[in-house]
Image 1 (cartoon, rainbow, N blue to C red):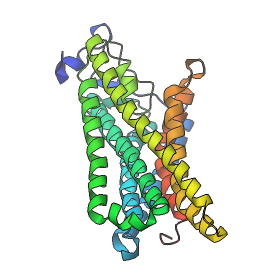
Image 2: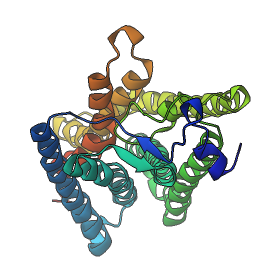
Image 3: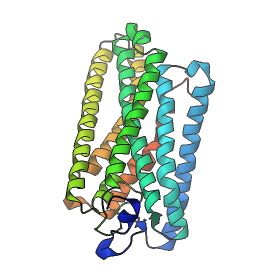
Image 4: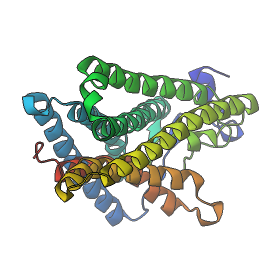
Length: 307
């Protein structure tokens, strides 16, 4: 069964699974309403913060630099993550439901993976921007001209689209024969894979995950290597003021990378012995909701031009 109709009819014990059941934050009505207002506040803060960055960078000529150009694209991915996951979670908390349509689940998984992959690529590119600015300042204009920046940003979005398309198309072509309840508050590829019962399809998706993880690990190694070179170059700056200025341009990016990577890596590699629905919800909330909301604040704290 590879069609949508066939997939929907391959539920547990032959029962139709027109809808996917998401994990509720709580069974108590008071806590559900609390989650609704909490998510509403977070989403409004994210929309305001990222919207202000988009407006400032787009309208102010002084912010038309490579660093701020990539920050604009990072804000777009943050808005994409928030707008993909939070509205449905708010709807379910407000109306005391846990369902999402099969098509809606596929769309949510696609757009979330699209935004997360693009954000990962953009954080790597922004690290390269800081590396060139500090370690090779005389070549900055050559290596990071407007054409080069546009090509790198386009590559980040293209990698996100291709990665999410491959994973979503393969995952949602598998028959779901282990029920229709996800252990997650939004549709994500790994929990959906646990519901499938196609060995060949599972192996295909595992191969795609290995390829994606290898590329991600390569980007992570590049970021670590770049920051080693950056810190070595900064420590060689003779004046305290120069070192402080150089560190100030790197710390926001380093904070965002640390928050994003630490939550994602721990979510993937955490031992099964400490795994629990509440911990999974907390971790997924950190990298899918909290991190995109905090990024504008982190980047604006030490960016005097942006302020």
